[in-house]
Image 1 (cartoon, rainbow, N blue to C red):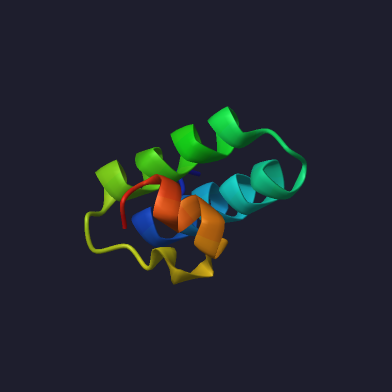
Image 2 (cartoon, one colour; image 1 turned 90 degrees about the vertical axis):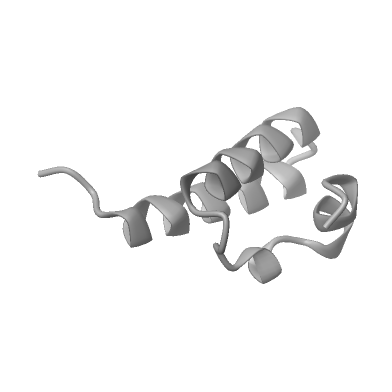
Amino acid sequence: MPMDKKDQLAELISNAETSFYNGQLQEAFSLSLSAIKLDENCNISKLPAELQSCQGI
């Protein structure tokens, strides 16, 4: 069963956060950009502040 948009966003944000804390910064950045592309109004406030600032957010 396909995931709905909300579930996809939650998974992307969770994976981005995990990647960030594991030092996989490029992967974290890529995942967070994917979340933003999926929904420009997505709540990225759950991402670490350091990653948000890297994106110019």
